[in-house]
Amino acid sequence: MIRDENDVSGLLQLSRALAKGDAIVVVGPELSRLAGAPAPIDLASTLRRDLNPSTPATPLAAVAQAFRDQFGDYALYARLRAALEASAQAPTPAHRLLAELPFLVHVTTNPDALVEDTLRKLQYPIQVVADAASLSGWNETRYVQVVKLHGDLARPDTIALAERDVAHVLRRGSPVRTQLADLVRYRTVLYVGYGINDPELQLLLKMRDEDDPKPSRPAFALTFDTHHDQLAEWRRRIVRPIAIDAPPERREDALCKTLEHLTTLVQSRPTGCDILIVDDEPTLRTAFRMMLERGMPGVTVDAAENGVAAMMRMAALRPKLMLVDLIMPEMDGWRLIDAVRKEPNYAGVRFIVLTGMENLEWMQRAEKLGIPYVMKPFERDDFLNIVRLQLMRVGVR
Image (cartoon, rainbow, N blue to C red; front, side, top):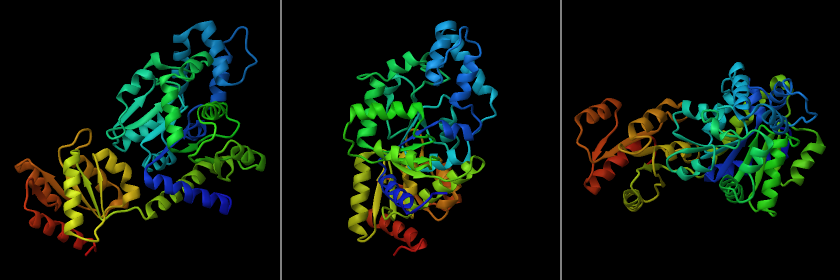
């Protein structure tokens, strides 16, 4: 588990950033190794066996470059894919806990698909960003962004594992690097799955130092580094380490306990609300919010622009009542209600559905679920009475 009061203090500070919804997570190889995927050193060894002449290099990018120079792009891609498919990998509980925290952007240097597979299993619509062209669809209000710095195996043309390819993708001024620099400059960053000596981490920190020499936003690391020299190096690189002290065979369990503790801290932050409005129409969100705040003084109200944003903020907001529009892009109201009801932590949340559709099937479905079905437009006082009744049922008066 975490080592001392400094690590506890780091978790508290990190939880504040997460509760505000302005943090990103950068996922490294240790998380994939815990899931059964080959470590970078193992992938490098696999590639090195076929090299003639061999190479004394040890970082994966350097070995991959030598392999690519001898055998070509497709051979490198085929070998990478074969190595990953041969491993018995599956998302771990740690992947799920990390995915359930309110990160709208996940960055990974891992070539596997564990991050996006976990998010898909949780029914989050995702956008995989694997090259400059993918950036044109960047939309954090509709999708959880998964930035794969070494490309996406589902798209062989995006693979950037060899040294020169990595240098090209992450060169100064490139679209991917510019996006990454903006994320690191304006968000709180959490690094998970890296040791301070990891070559991938060193590359990321070098880029950050070049793009933002005096970082104003905090950065944290959940790391298995515990030696005082390693922790001192993290701090020298302006990253606050939260050390997880566990033997190799207990690391996954220790990481899960730390993430569970972080989740509890985020959920306990005083940023919650009594009512969460979920509607993709900005004017309606504003109108509902004003109506509720003026008509029910003392009731706290927040809003989310769609089901994805609502799910990602649930841990921080902990609403008692959700007003849900049924017709929304990517995750409609019914899917949102189903997703919330499946999560034991949100068992007490009540719902009111809001829609302009007079749909008999929907009305019957809402009645069966015990959810009030409110048609737009509606009478203000009648609507407020429905809201008051639902809040009374969860102890808000």
